[in-house]
Image (cartoon, rainbow, N blue to C red; front, side, top):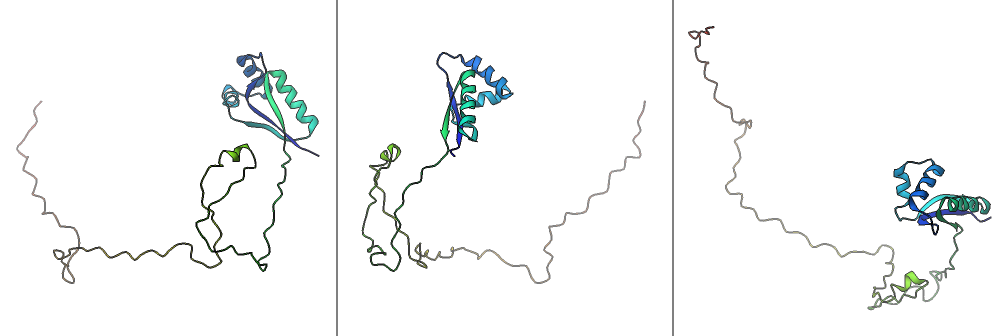
Amino acid sequence: MNLYEIVFSGQLVPGAQRERVEANLAQLFQADAQRIALLFSGRRLVLKNNLDQAAAEKYRSTLERAGALAEMVDMQVEMEEVELAPPPDSPGFYPPPKTNRRLQVVPRDAYMAAFLEVDAPDFSIADLGSALQEPKAPVPAPRLDLSQISLAPVGADMDQIKKPPARPAPDTSHIKLSS
């Protein structure tokens, strides 16, 4: 049994007014204006999925009566035939040594045809346990002039420099406040 999803991308039924469609959808979905504005953002939104054909058609026609042009999309994914690689013990399993080979792209659809003229290297998979990156060159230690630095003698106090004791407060006994 095929399952379907209802997809909406902000398109309106011909002749429908956007304000009226927004009001209809707000009532239909019981949603606020912010959520309805999200529906009309232009992005492709899946409103409902995993529906049988009858239920999907019911949702689509309800949205169409509200003025929104939704589409019913089959969720069944078409499987692509894949050619299996030969077993590892067969002759010709390991590719010949790498020469400056370039990848040849054969387009399978219109999207892939856009990348037909791309010049990309033909990468292969490295053997198990091989180094994938050249080892880094050792970094030389920086040359620092430490001749002006000295160490405190053993047992010296390494605390902060102490401030001199505060002076005694001035004598204010002779001062009087008058009112």
